[in-house]
Length: 155
Image 1 (cartoon, rainbow, N blue to C red):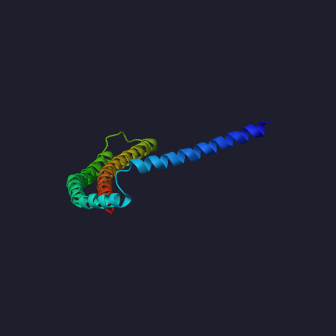
Image 2: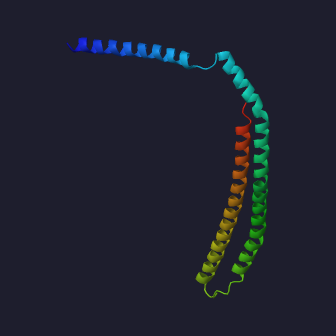
Image 3: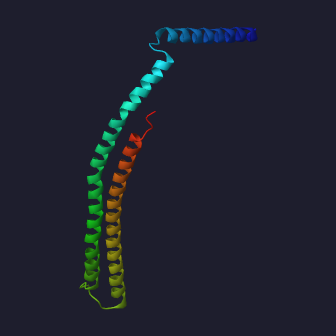
């Protein structure tokens, strides 16, 4: 009994699919404003007119990204230049630290403090350098993405 009902439902579903496909095809034929050849020709004309727009977008994007690249490179350079003397001065100050020096235990603490200070300065220098490089890389990636989006084939 269940097989018969299932079979009827399957036939009804298939009939609905066929009727839907035929009615969709007839509607598309009736409502299409141009033939396929006319549509392809119109697409060719439109895509050939996009060449100057593509060039303008590429130029504008490159002009917008150039200052960002330059400033990012300057930031990396300035950070590197600023960190070098600071690192040396921090090491010098750690060496001249007026901490009390008496027994062996205090000397080890001073050496450990100098090492910690140097590590912190190195870490800060690396973080500044990484941040500057990240800005530079982000600007470069943005420029590449703009160029890729505007370099699509025009046919």
